[in-house]
Amino acid sequence: MRCERCQGCMIRDSFVDLRDDTGRVLFEGWRCINCGEVVDPVVLTHRVDVPAKPYRGQTRDRRTWERLTAV
Image (cartoon, rainbow, N blue to C red; front, side, top):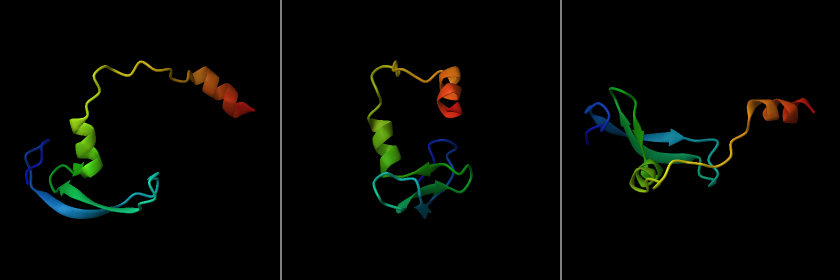
């Protein structure tokens, strides 16, 4: 398998994700030995399901965030 970023060699690897919301800690994927690109089923799904428009939702203003954390 070739890396899409640098065309380097990809190897099969195991990864640990402690912040995963699904409860899975260990997952399998591919890692490029040249640039470090990681590809797993979730990454591939997100690459296929590209959003139609850019995100236009609300984001928190830094001043609002500072007020919320100061309390």
